[in-house]
Structure formats: C-alpha cells, structure tokens
Amino acid sequence: MIERQAILDAFQFRHACKEFDAGKQIPAAEFELILESARLSPSSFGFEPWHFIVVQDKALRESLKQHAWGAPLKLDTASHFVLCLAMKSPFLDPKGDYLPKFMREVQHHPQEVADMRLGFYTQFQQSDFDLSDERKLFDWASKQCYIPLANMMTVAAMRGIDSCAIEGFKQKETDALLAEQFGVDLAQYGLAYMVAFGYRKHEPRPKTRRELAQVVSWK
Image 1 (cartoon, rainbow, N blue to C red):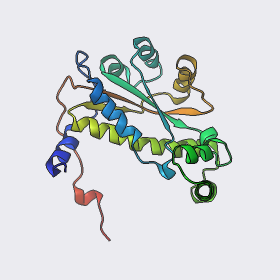
Image 2 (image 1 turned 90 degrees about the vertical axis):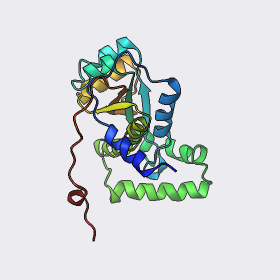
Image 3 (image 1 turned 45 degrees about the vertical axis):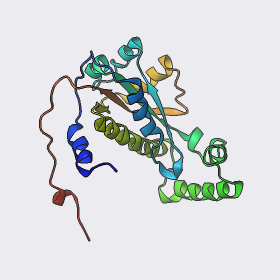
Image 4 (image 1 turned 90 degrees about the horizontal axis):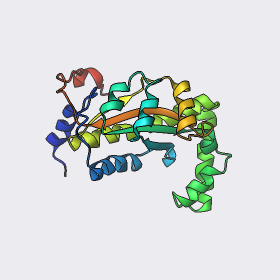
C-alpha cells in the first residue's frame, strides 16, 4: 500500500512546469508507465473517447508553436510532449457502427448486455445530458479526456517527473494543422489539450491552495 505521506508529497511536488531541463530525458519505461495510467483511466460508460499522440519529432513540435501560445518553451524543452484527441460523433453516435463493435470486442459484453447498455447511453445522450449537437458531444468527450490527464500528471509526480497541461492554443487553427501535418481526421477527432513532461529546470514557488474547509462542505 502506498503511504499517505507519499501521496501528499506527490501532489506537493506537482506543479505547472513552465520550462524543463532540455538535457534530461524520461526513461522509456517511466514514460510507458505514464501512458499506461492514461490507458487504464476510467471514462463514462467505459467508452475511452480519446487518442494520444506523442510528439517527439522536432519539426512537428516546431509547427505546433504558431497556434499554441501556451506551449513554445515547453515544446523546446520537454522530454515528451503529448496531444490528446477527443472523439467526435462518428465514434460516439449510438446509431453508429463503432460503439456496438466496441462493446463486443473491447468490453466483451454479450449482445443482449451491449444492446441494453446502448439503450441507456442513447437516453443519456438524448435527454439526461442533452448531447444533441456536435459541440456538446465533443465537450462531453473532452471532459472524459481530462481524467487520464490528471492520472498521467499524478503518476508522473509520483515518479519525480514534472508536467504541464496546456490549453493555451487556438483550437480551430491547431486542429487544421493536425489534419494537415499529423494526418488527423477532423470529422473523427478534435484536440482536447496538450501536456508536456520532463524534469524541471527551476524550482517552483510554494504551492498555494485554499484550505480544505473552504472547498468542502459536509451535509
């Protein structure tokens, strides 16, 4: 069992690292662990509405800078740089071909269980959460994608690896770039976030947070 203090230490260690030590690389086994934490993350209905692109090619990193105002220094110095794509309606439409196949081949549900779960999801999408248009559905999928983001950053911190999540980019322009240079099908995916990993160049300032009593209510 992981000691309580070790968990707290990891959360104290983690910060939004603005610049990494470009001379230090994360060992392959360590980064595989980080990616595995993303793969094993939970999601609504267990649909895993994500795909991760690890961008190590220098030219591709350079191309991302033009529309990602929050990323240039990180793109230059991070050991590993990840793009998280969120699925769109071709994958998440309950009337489409993908989800029934996913339920059978990945989740290993019998047909009657898959049909029942698909019925629940249809109701959820149409009325419970009103995922009635493409933007709402993409935003819902993106919310799921933030679960593996948190897990990756936490696992990294537990291994003494720094990270920084990035939303500082022009979404339409960056998506277009991904289609042009990364081969991303924009009918199927959109960029949810970027995240950089590496080892800090500078020590961060002390962490500031509200007290627990200010953010938690008991009823």
